[in-house]
Length: 254
Ligand SMILES: [Fe+2]
Image 1 (tube, helix red, strand yellow):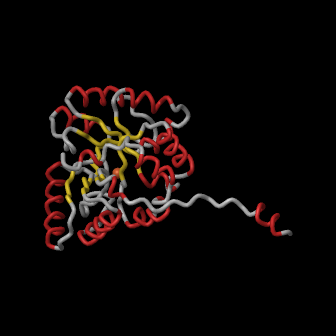
Image 2: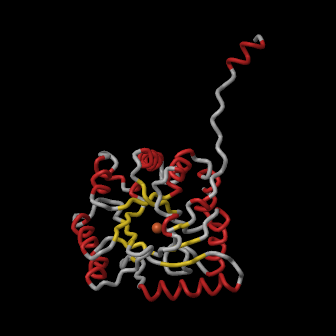
Image 3: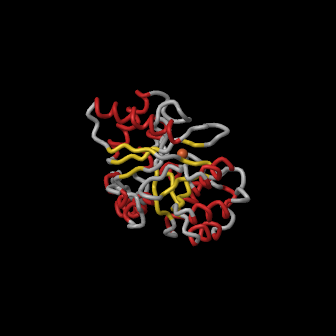
């Protein structure tokens, strides 16, 4: 092969981007870092180790969100806030510089509706409430429940909408949720393909459509941290971080 032929037939190189530093996002508002109360950090050592990793990515404010899901993780605000205080003490002892707070990831069920009526909801960034839906099907009272949250003065933030496969066949499902003033939170690791190619594709589509308001790590264990090496060079993550759409940084000093 001649020199020129070789030159022009060389395969196109994929554009490589520098790993993204999360200091621009600054705040992670979805993780499971209170030891031993859900499927996240197992003990204090584990929790501290995971927090150190997040600080290493550039986060300086962590709002951890243990599950409140009566059937599996019957946590209460008291359990979560006491756990938060223990973690804070340990961070202080070890001189780890990060703002550490806690709220919850509420599973939308009747128990959540009872807590809502009793006004016993953990919020973050003022009036934000993180909640998740069943992965099987849209709960029949999703819209009513959300409207009741809004009437009570809360700002609903829906966790990982890209993972609700029952919405995938109609993109307008997402548009109508956003039109109802529900803010969408994407899991960073959805872009890695961890939850499958469909979830990855939907994540990219939601970013392209400008529908994502919050980015969360949803860190439970080191497996999630290791995925960071792949996802930190993801062009869609870069696009989202640079879009100006993310509300994470605006809540740092809230
Ligand atoms: Fe979560």
